[in-house]
Image 1: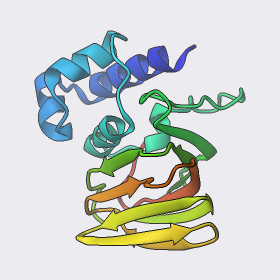
Image 2: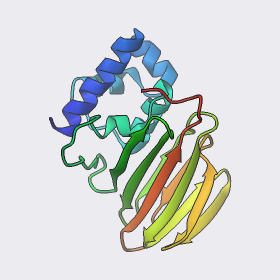
Image 3: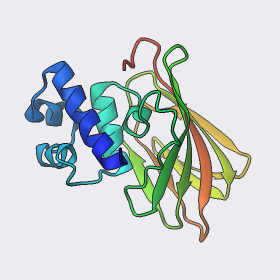
Length: 182
């Protein structure tokens, strides 16, 4: 199954399981009803930021949208912004430890702002190759290869590549122990 079809099916299943209308889902996630409908009809590839809003609204791990559970197949690469940001899950969501781990490549000039996750979420970012500018709260940080940053994921944060080469970084998202459900 291709990633767009998988996204459509996952979103429909989550809404059905909760009995949510498109209107209610739009209110909870901050994603427009029109966009949600387009995703469900497989007419639109959402950005990473949009998927984060949906995952946060449903209180589910982000990886649920980019890797079919227990797929056993090669992990899909999620590339909705025409190679601006590529997210690959390194480990599937761990129910007991409550974390996702991703390898993320951000193209030169790429920028992605993440809306706040659920209260208590902590994110760890480690740059593997290149230079990453990160904004947490009102403060900007520049991270080089081998450097990391731990921050509260329940506030708005931005990833930016202001260099002329790709930046590769790992992002470990540790969800609040009482929060995330699948």
